[in-house]
Image (cartoon, rainbow, N blue to C red; front, side, top):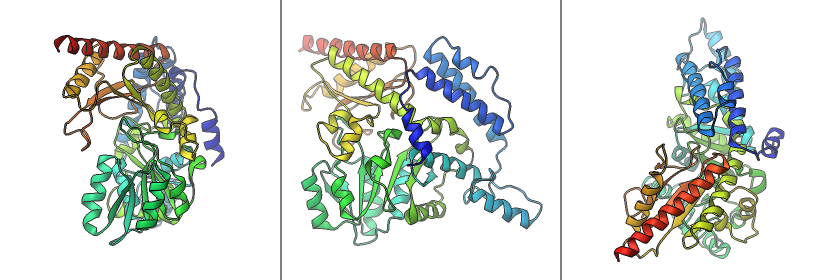
Amino acid sequence: MTAAHAAGHGDAVAPSGRNYLDRLARDVVEECRQNGLKAPTGFPGTVVEAPSFTAAFEAYESGADALAGLLGTTFQPAQAYPSMEAFWSDAHAQETGTSPNAYWDSYENGARRRVEADLADAFGTQQAVLVNAGMSALDVAVRASGVGPGNSVLVHDRMYFETHDLLTHVFGPWGIEAVHADLRDEGATRHAITSHRPRLAVAELALNGPRCDIPVLEPLTESGMRLLLDFSALGHSVRPADLVEGADVVYIESGMKYLTRKTGVGVVYGEGAWMDDIRAGARRTGQQLQGRALHWIRGGEIRACAQRAALHGARRRLFVATLREHLPQAAVTDALSGAGARRDRLARAVQDGADGCMVFVCLTDPDDPRAETLHRDVIARWAAGFATDRVRAGFGWTATTGRSYGRDALNTGLGECFIRISVGIEDEDGIVAQARGLARAARDVLGAAEDRS
């Protein structure tokens, strides 16, 4: 772990979301100065002095968007040079991030290298590679892992549906077999490793679903195979030094969760030859993050990733406690319930604060034919109580949002019916009010359903 990374996690717990936004606003001013640009009018005062968290966030977003726009107007996908000597001199500088230019963006971009270095430092790894999306991160990491026809990949039996689709429909026809096991079960995992001898294991550190599965990593790390860990659900509350490090492990994240809300982005983190092959593979397949998308990722947000994750976790815990108090009949689950009382490495990390922002609420028996309608009605009634729209896909949003899942095209093949809330980083009073509002909406909808029956 780098010194900067340790310091970043050391100050990760913030007393309020307003302090977090104040830090980001000051970083925007500094980023403007470094790029020779004028800071947004009134910055950071419009953020610091805003009358509410919502107003402070809107003020920050306005300034950050203005900076991204200014950077975009100056971007050139290929810098012009007076000579080949100047071309090659700048090309070498771009590879180290000492030049912000691009001699051809799809191949090399010095600004991208700078952001990658900041990401690696913030997360605590030697390298990071920026790509177009979380699925791009998974794709390039698997392609570069060394698996080929006749090899198998060990996966969790309830992995994310898009991960399943990639392994089944892209890598499967190449002769790469996905071996499914309950990675929560140490015995089942060891049996799958012994029986199939997989060359690679792909594991999500927390399942995006009401069972909130948390895998046991020890059998995977002891097997000697390469390990690909998707930490998108938990964000930068995860510390590689607390889990597993080395040349045969890479971490991936979908950056449009906690890293940025402005553009699609994926990141691969790690060290050694596998990461070198990942970077080369991203270039060869055109999956490196391109052009102006890069300008929507703020340096301050990268450096404050751990602080943001801590805020999400603290607010989620408050939301869950309030909801359980006011709606005791519901099944409310989160990453903490997925970890339970286990004492393995990952479970301890989750218990110590790497617990993400997601809350899952199941109101009825899974076999209840009314389940889908009831959950939809509850989330609709809850969302109607806000002045701003609150029904939204994805998680990790600054403001608390939610949606219902059912037997629909946007759900997994399991077709489970539930509500997922993405708890934001608003002030505590707002979080309590939102949890109480959800409990009230659930009681009203369930009560009306009982009256009809």
